[in-house]
Image 1 (cartoon, rainbow, N blue to C red):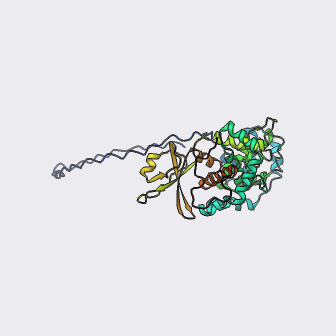
Image 2 (image 1 turned 180 degrees about the horizontal axis):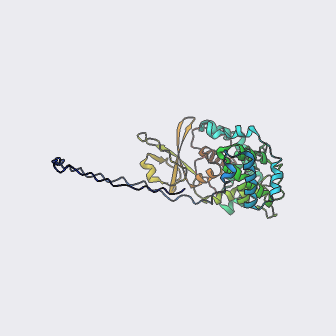
Image 3 (image 1 turned 60 degrees about the vertical axis):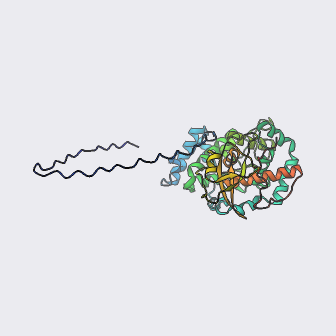
Length: 387
């Protein structure tokens, strides 16, 4: 944007020589201003990988004709990722717009349900017991990845449990249809989804065993047991058993290694806590941080009235999460590893569901508790690691 320079013009006003000057106003000495309150100290943010590329405006501007945007997409994808333009055109010719995808993405559960209802989707006896059984059936592979990465096995299992009910529900939409629909018919998030569509072409060129047209996933284009988006698959998927391929659809060694690697890439702290149940001083208003980044020192949060309950884990920095629970308001301190879970899905309710499910799965594996966690209890608030 060009810089606009404004020039101030000084205007001289001259009094008539025969006019007496007005009396001088009385001198008022203002009291000294109080010292400015020091800004609340913030800790460094959790280091993150570079942002995944989004598509440029000539691909995503809804004011442009649709066919023009699609042509620009072909050029962008071919230029950026080296995919043959005709291959892109041939695949897009097989893609279909789905209104059901638009309907689904505009009303996700995180946006419409309070925590007291949202948690009931995932903290059920069937899902907890299913997680225990899945863990025990894959224990060696899970614990090997956990030892290598520092990500507890129960969190890997909980992600799979929340995302796909342990691989049973991986999505019914063709990935190409989901990304095509959202790239060209969902202006609000078109830059992201057009970027993901381009990544889908790049990924399937890199991993030719993946069927660019036939693979199915979620309404957002996420796929496999861990529901990786194309860019996450392409950038952070791991070959967990050295067979030369990265199969996140059904191959468990690759799925486990890739979920753990996703956490590590986004800053997982080996042995670190996840959350702590907190109390809020009744005389203080609720604090709603701008982000879930754990940049607030515990001393600063204590000044705002938030203190971890006795016996709860503590860490250098935290964020605050306020929920509507079944028994009333719930207050939590979210630490670095809580933030990392929100990189998988930005909803704090999602991250809390993963955490509490992981704790319940661990308890089931250890034989200490099997079944649903009662709402409003402190079950599952420990540090979330077991090495």
